[in-house]
Image (cartoon, rainbow, N blue to C red; front, top):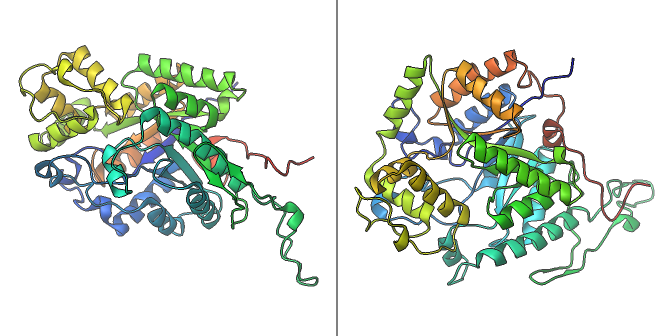
Amino acid sequence: MAETKKLHLTAFMRPVSLHTGAWRYPGAYPDANFNLAHLKSFIQKLEAAKFDAFFMADHLAVLNMPVEALKRSHTVTSFEPFTLLSALSVVTERIGLAATASTTYDEPYHVARRFASLDHLSSGRAGWNIVTTGNPESSKNFGRDEHLEHSERYKRAREFYDVVTGLWDSFADDAFVRDQASGVYFDPDKLHVLNHKGDDLAVRGPLNIARPVQGWPVIIQAGQSDPGRQLAAETAEAVFCSPRDLASAKALYADIKGRAAAAGRSREHLKILPAAFIVVGDSAEDARAKRLKLDSLVHYDSAIASLSVALGSDATGFDPDAPLPVDQIPDTNASKTSLASVLKLAADERLTVRQLAGRYGGYSGLAFVGTPQTIADEMAVWLAEEAADGFTVVFPFLPQGLDDVTLKLVPELQRRGLFREDYEGTTLREHLGLPRPENRFFPKS
């Protein structure tokens, strides 16, 4: 019999929950997003459950919302991803450590150096989530009055990727001979100076760190706009995305994998991992009650501010009990994917501004709410129908919501042969079934 295809599971952990009410849930840790002891406990539980990776998004500015809403946000203080993941690397052994780094407000040499360091510190568990940064407020923290235009951000990102991966290939894998007798530490014939000069970037190199354990840390991409999909098809090995239903997920899956094949890549070397908000209950009614309680903890100030962030423009002046005034919403230089998702949801479900804000103030994306058995049923369908290769799990509240997934849902998936019972390798590439990239400057003969 053919082996059952298995799911990949990553944990979305910055913030620890995307739900605005998470920190207020009864019994939840209110400081879970900014408490090292809690985060250490979370990642060790995820590793015990054999998750592929611990994934950290990042923001380079506080969220662009009025202070009346901002004061209710548990994300206003968060650890810088590399600092936290470096600390967590020494209290874990197998779970992948994936961080977001911006191609708009960072430099390739910095990014290449930090990820190479993390990959060595963790013995090959690092992953880089490439983002172009959708929040226009970020520009004001980096000496710029205006956010770089959407298409320009993606053009820079593509060149940025080429430079970073070129820097990771600065040394051949066997460059460091460390011959104590002769006094030769490395072979200079196995060092490549990049000397990159492009439209947006000029980087001499070489990187002052040995080639990463994985060759390159795993490349992750999170954009769903047309330029984002193309960047993913050309560069990504895992895609974090947010389709709302099975049909749209299948279309996204086919499109990105089709583009990857057209670019000469194997479809199996790119994993599609949609975000899934998971609420586990002892019964369907119990799970629904948990979500209703959680949603009730979102204040309207937070809800309308979250809707404004998703739209990329201020929604506070809209009539809360009227339909979304689409003709009053300007085009945005923030996230095109986010704006399109809001407009589609408003049209599909005919929601008022208040209802729409409530959805965005809580969690508006794909949700699996039910028992371990019903959620496993749904996940199996997504895997079988090529809508996903796995999921990026979004927890409703912590620690209980995380415990529900690791102690109740994961064993059910394992019982069905849909998820690993133990790690088969030591690196994030091995967890995801990805090949180690060959050094472009020192190919093996």
